Every structure is written in structure tokens, then in C-alpha cells.
Length: 485
Ligand code: NDP
Image (cartoon, rainbow, N blue to C red):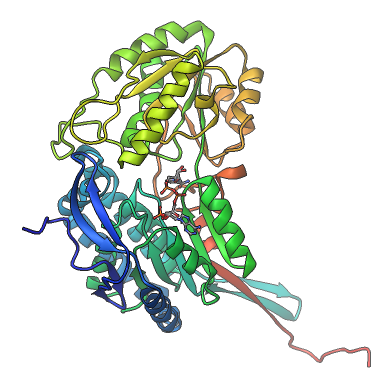
């Protein structure tokens, strides 16, 4: 019997499911059991062509509708996603292995938030009138054209919506390629957008590995590329997009600092460190994986952290009591286990976890290392798994310098009861998405994105509009034209 996760076909193009079995098969593995639950095929060159041609053809007419009309469709899709939240959350769990306890509140719902928010903004995307004496300049906010979205595997529904919603609100069309590891959820987003009334051809999903992404990024018809992925992939995609002067948004990885001063509320700081390291089994780009703890509270902090981490419930992700799921894939599990071994070898003190959890699927215990030093591999490289590195510090100046000593700059957090210190320290941290006495909140109203190697551009909030539209300025002369001859 076909598994309920099996999609009708691999791709969604021009308002319908499309199959081409000539493409390389991509098995979909349920991370909690290691079983194959579905199969899709990578896009062949013919499928890539179909998707790009249809998206190109549909865009101009879409851009000529009013923002209010566009927004209405997006908001209708948001409502439909909320109504189908349970079914979509189950699919997200099959796609990623993340526990239903999380997916019920963080994935389809976050996608719906983006569709609702950008749907609401669509009718107010206007230009400016700039008086110049008798003359004036006016500006027009125009769509970029055909946008390509490429997703990572940790938030397949959310990423498909975070890119699709602002793109469509601004009058663009999109071809979206999910990660080959999680190909299922974006197809549902496309299906729902079309059920909500989106004209055919405006939001297309095609499957494939990096080479399909590469074909999309280099196509001259594409005006913009938005990638969520790792820094090495981001550098390649950015360079390929630059060859044709395409617009980009790059949401890349991080190794973010979470700084806990000795006046912090310990329970809140421990909660922040847990949210910033173990949510989605640590597979979150903005995670605060370098936890700097001021020496005065170090042992107290570590004790509570270890105690509370024991409460994680590993198990069947479909059981709503489970609070900690597997790694997305065997490959990712092995990468993370390799980093754990490095941490042990390099002399970090293991205070919790540190092993594969021996049950079906790709589970790793939530792992905490203390006495980590700045030069250790686990303090320098993005692990993308449940591995927290706790480092000690003495002074504010010292911790700021050490926190910034990284190529990354996605997020940063500070826990302190001294709010002027909180703002002062955050002001000096080189990061795009920051938190004071909290960690990893990502409401659609707040800009999200990184500095330094962590990325270019911002998703969410009104800021995202600047990355899915461009401004035309028009000088209007009322009098005669003066010329030298
Ligand atoms: P990858 O960088 O490996 O892949 C990202 C996407 O790019 C995938 O769809 C991949 O396809 C595709 N891709 C790979 N090579 C190319 C290429 N040459 N041209 C075009 N597309 C290509 O990231 P992961 O999927 O492993 O995700 C984990 C990474 O994503 C982490 O570094 C994490 O920090 C980052 N991330 C960043 C977020 C942010 O918003 N800042 C949010 C979530 C994750 P395929 O994998 O199918 O081959």
C-alpha cells in the first residue's frame, strides 16, 4: 500500500502535479525509522525548462494585478494551511523527523504567518512622490520577475512559504527547489496556493540535488535567487548568480554566541540555551551553539542545564509527548557524531549525552560539552546537530571580542538582568538576528538574516519587500528642457 506521505507526483508545475520518471530517483527516508516512505524523481532538463518557461510566462500578468488581489489569495492560502495544520504537521514530521510536538506549532503555522503577513502588505506596496520645485520625481515599486527559491532540509514548509509569500506579494513568480532530503512539504504549499486561487505557473516546485539548483541559478531568465543553506553552498550560488547580476538573498549558517552574565536568571538562561541548541534536534541555523557563561555562575548553570536536559523525551516523533527527534538523515547523524568525537578528543568535558541513542532511526542524545575553548573544532564549525559548547568568560570586553571572532554572523543572544548592559553588548555583537533574555524567536514581523559569511539580505518583515522588488524612479519635468546646444 502506498504510504500517505507519497506525493501524487514529483513536481508541481503550471498549477498541476507533473512526473518524469526519467529523473534520478530520490528515496524519501523517515528519519525516525530509517524506512523509505516515498520516492520522487529529480527534475530532468525538460522539467527544469517547463518550470522556468511557465513561471516566466505567468509573471507579467500577475504583476499587473492589484496588490490587494494578490494579497487576498495569499491570505486565503494562510487560512487553508491553518485549517489543515494537523495533516501538514504530520507530513513535516515524515519529511524531517522533527517531533509532532514541534511541527504542530512551528512549521505550517509559521508558513501561514508569512502568507498572511505578506498578503496583508501586498496592497500597500507603493512608491514615493518627491517634489523638485515645479518638477517632481515619483518612484514605482516593481516586481523583480522570476525568482528561484532553494531550500535547506530543516524547515521545508516554512522555507517554501518564507520565500514564496514575499515573492508573490510583490508580483513575482517562483520556481522552488526543496532540499533532496525533504522534498515533500513544498509540494503541499504549491497545491494549497493554487487551491486558494493562485493562477497557474506562479509557484512551481521541482525536485533535485545541487545540479538542478545550479541549472536554475544560472538560467538567464531568472532575476533573483533566494537560498537557505550552508555557507559553502551560499558562496557558490552567490557567485553563480553574480555572473548574470541577479538579485540574491542568502540565508546561511552560523555559530552564534549566547552570552550569559552572572546576574542572569538561571532558569531563563538555561531555557534559552536549550531552545538555542536542542530545538529541532539542533538543526537550526540561528542556534546559539557557543554558550559563554560568566565564571561566577558556571557550575550552577551547568548543573541545572544537565538536570533539565535529562527531561528531553526521545522517541516516536508522532507521539505528541516526544520532545526530541532524530537527525534528518543518516548522513547528518554521522557528521554530528564525528563532531562529538572531535570534542572528546580535543579535551572538552562531556557533561551530558555524547552518544547515538540506540533506537530505530537517526537519534543522537542531546549533548553538552563544558570547558570548551575558542580554538576547539566544536567551537569553530557549524555542527547542525544537538551539540552545545559551553565556554567560560570573565569580563564583558573579553566576551564581546571572543563572540565576534568567527566568520559567521547570523544570531547572538545575551542573558542579563542589567538591561543597559544587555543593549550595550548586543550593540557590539556582529550578528543580524539578536535576542535579549530570550533565544530563537522568529516572528514574521521581525527581519531575519545574517551578517558576515552568514548571509546577504533579510527574510520576513517589511525588509523582505526590498529583496523581492526594485524601485523605478521617474523624473517629470513640467517646464522646457535646457540644453547646452
Ligand atoms: P546545503 O547548503 O547543503 O543545501 C542547501 C540547498 O542548496 C539544497 O537544496 C541543496 O540541494 C542546494 N544546492 C547545493 N549545491 C547547490 C549548487 N551548487 N547550486 C544550487 N543549489 C545547490 O544546506 P543543507 O540542506 O545541508 O542545510 C543546512 C544548512 O542550511 C546549514 O548550514 C544551516 O545553517 C543552513 N540554514 C540556514 C538558515 C538561515 O535562514 N540562515 C535556515 C536553515 C538552514 P541538495 O541538498 O538537494 O543537494
